[in-house]
Length: 100
Image (cartoon, rainbow, N blue to C red; front, side, top):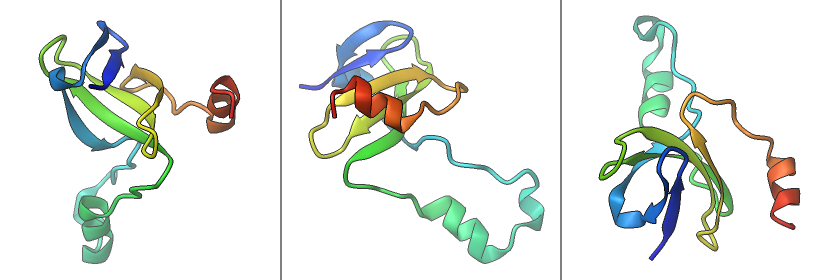
């Protein structure tokens, strides 16, 4: 079982959380002026990388807050979690801290 460190409650088992998609997805300031192709890409297309991925999670059975998580999709290792709304951490710094 994966232990996910909620930045508000501390480490908890993965069954307490729900995945909420890719983090740091830019939303249109005025959706009414976005063309159909760009709107479809915003709604349906995500990066889905093999390796380091910035994700959004919600602690359903705890504080009920959203937060962001940097996770390696190959090993499932969580490199960092941080509150929603915070700036995206520098990937090079995270990799050095993880010893990569």
